[in-house]
Image (cartoon, rainbow, N blue to C red; front, side, top):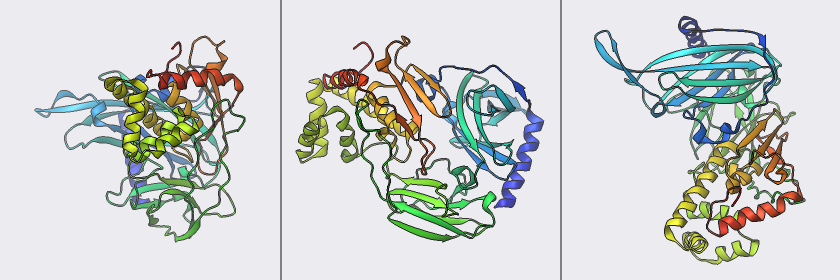
Length: 432
């Protein structure tokens, strides 16, 4: 497998140089810009999947895939035939840290993509020279050159340890293709390889069946941090340095993989059920109603024999109108879905602090982001402190996506205002 990856890598580098490439090291002014588009799908026309894999101590690979239905194919003449062709530009800027002024490297590649035999996605990767034991921020821009659509994504590149997720490649057993997600379907078999850990022979897997509670309200005195949990069981996998090892997540829960059991660092995969990140079953759909109910109100819903009936009764009672009920259901559960996409960590995205605020209040109009924190603002008037939320990144063995809200009593009135708006049949927005 390693030989195949190296061969593909050499071809990719050669093609990149032939098509279009530029590289630079320079200084630019620090930027403090609004990045609210990161969590608002309506503000981006292309929604790529990306991940980083460290193939050696000096090279890292940026993998990406784009849905074909988000690309524009123009009809062109080619060898007396008419072909449908898209043109996509993928650019990156490697920076010393997020928002800083030092650009270590940058490059762009333009892809001419024929639609014939393409399938549903276009996938490729770009090689980036990244020094060992270093940590960087990577800005990735993807543009459709024929429609001027674009997306911007920020990733961390962390080569300070050989134990974290970016040092492991997951390949689907059926197609031998890279897997981009950290949450996998139940019993989906996959291969694990790690080119930077090719001298290891044992891979340890700690399994946690824990189900975490919803976060406390933003005005609560509780801190919202993850409680310590103990693993339910540990497996030892015989790791083949040439072929990797096959595994599947047969039980719902958390799987933490490590070569070195003396360190907490590793990479984590999740089995969150067949439907994740969607919610489809009545049992999945009823639990998020806890945000809109008192403890007693939610217990009353649980007493209704059918979860489906309880959900229908709640929304019809809330709106008093079937059409309005359908609209509220559409918005509320769409927000839960996007929360799962953006904020999933050790917990499902909608059960995190950011997911809670996102669900009730929607996407913020302003986001200022650094490596360690995010500030969300729901008004251009910065004096509205009660609608400005600060989330701080927490060190977590399972994820780099754990952000905890700085809670305060100033949120109490507006939190209940948001809940009351939903309970009165109106999607909450500032000014309601």
